[in-house]
Length: 357
Ligand code: IPM
Ligand code: MG
Image (cartoon, rainbow, N blue to C red):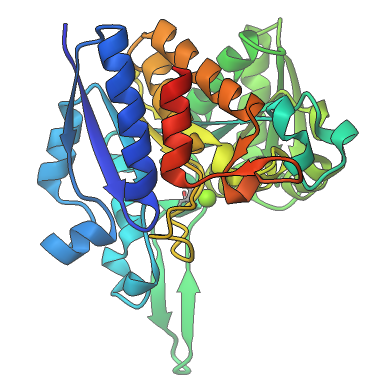
C-alpha cells in the first residue's frame, strides 16, 4: 500500500535541510521498498510571495489527504513587517490547528558523541533523555479574544487570552501518561497554578487522570522552577507535559542541553495518528543559503515520521543508526563542532548519512 507524504520546505534554511531529509527518505524508500510517494506545497513566506497568504486552503486540503507531513521551517526578516494576520508563522499555526495536531512530542536526547557540544557540564547532561509533550492547538496561541485595541485615552493595548478546557487538558494529559508508560514512567506536569486559573484547572485535571495510570508517577512543577531545574539537574525529568506557550519556551531550553537545537526533531500528532514532523529549530535566516545548517534535526524528524505515522520501524532504526555512525566518524556541522571534529556543510552531512545507510 502506497503512503503519501507531503513536503513543506518553507523558508530560510528550510529548503536546504528538507532537501537532505528528502534524499534520506528516497534512499530508505528504495532500500526497504516502502512505496512512499511525495507531494510538495508552499508554506510561510514562500507561500505569501506566491499566493499572498502563508498557507492556502488548497494546501491544507492536500495535507489532509496525506499520511504524514514533513516540514522545514517558516519565517524570516523579509516578512517581519507584513500585516500580522498573514505572517509566515500563521501558516504553521493554521496547519497545526486545521489538522488538529494537538500533541507535540519534542524529545531532548543527548547523543553521547555530542556531550562536549552542550553548554552544560558533561556530568549534568550525559545520558539525558527527556520527552517534552507540548499542547499545540490551544492555550494562549489560539485563545480568543486577542488583538491590539485603542483605549479611551488613545493608548493602544495588546491582549491575548489564555484558556484551556478540561477536554483539551485531558487529551494531552493522556498522551503524556501513555508516552511515560513506554519510557521512564514519570510525568512532570508544568504549570503556573500559583497565579493562573487556566493552569489551576490544568493541575486539577492532571491529578484526576493520575489514578488511571497507577504505574506512572505524576509530579507538578511551576514553570519558572521547571526552567531552572532544566539547566540545574535536567536528568530528573522523564516526560514533561505542559501547555502551548510554556512548551515552546521549555523545549528550546531543553534543546540546548543536547548541544544544539539543530539536533532536535519533533512530531505533532492528531487523534487519528496522522502527524506533521519538523525540526524544533526555526528558519535561521542569519545562516540561510550558506550551506552550513545542520540537517540532522530534519533527518531525525523524517525517521520519527516513519516510526510514528507510518509504522516503518525498520527504516526509522536504520536512519537513527546512520546518524549515530556519522557522529561517531566525527563529522559535525558548525553548530555542533568542537575541538577534534571535522566541520562539514549541510550537503556533506547529508552525503555522510546516505553513505552510512
Ligand atoms: C516552534 C516555533 C513556532 C511556535 C513559531 C515559529 C510559531 O517556535 O515550533 O516552537 O511558537 O510554536
Ligand atoms: Mg519555538
